[in-house]
Length: 339
Image (cartoon, rainbow, N blue to C red; front, side):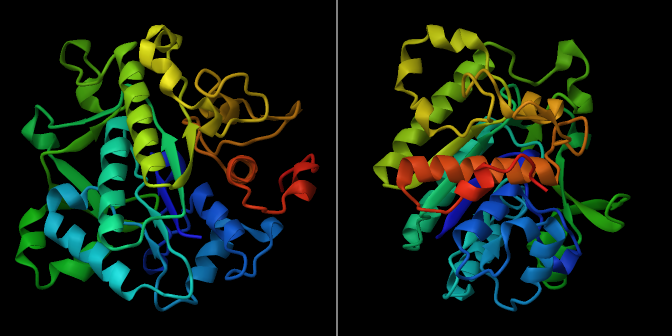
């Protein structure tokens, strides 16, 4: 089953064996579960490290995780890498393409999903299943008003691919720093587009904040959700939405609210509403059917292994409900623990 995913850091995969990175998203878990005929790994044995180790065995890739900022810094190379992947990927395993990225807002998730799906349609490679994880509603993509902030960060690994003999890439590099967590170099590429979040230094002063404020932020997301919903359905692509950040309830006042198909949302076990009982609070609280369980790996609510497996299971449940995928999860549903 061909799977496409977009979202923010709560769904980001950097499954690059070349980087030694073990950061694998829960949608990658979904891929492994829905493509068991190619991956002999049980659900109990699914971990970031086991998935990356499994990927080492493939010289020809079937997964694509491009740093999205490449499309704004070196667009020709971004397109070239995508084309090379489609032309040379393994033919015996359905692809997993993730455009999820740290800091991404819902405008970028909407635009970049729409663009990527059109590129895939041009190649005759539309996905069978699409997972869209919606992010913080105030986040936005824009041009920073400070020149010093007009750069993006990507792993130094990409310099080995493009930088040695490509002027376009080398001309975009304006610096680099050491990633203390990963112990590797990170390149700074000049760009006029960046993802703006409440954590950016540019947004700490209200007089100069470049964020979108509520309730318009949620109304804008609502429109993105509806437009993308109609596009996906027009292409007969099976899909689910995951609303990670709570939406403002004022959106119910708008006439267009009723056009959104709330049944397409993957909700957590104790959710009363797919938009107003979002995943972030649930993951941070760490409750699972009334039992306390750690599901976040940090204060920002990024899921740990328990959170990833729960998101995976709930996505499979919703996919079975909507599209009759016939994935066997009944035994896992009855379990009172995830690992």
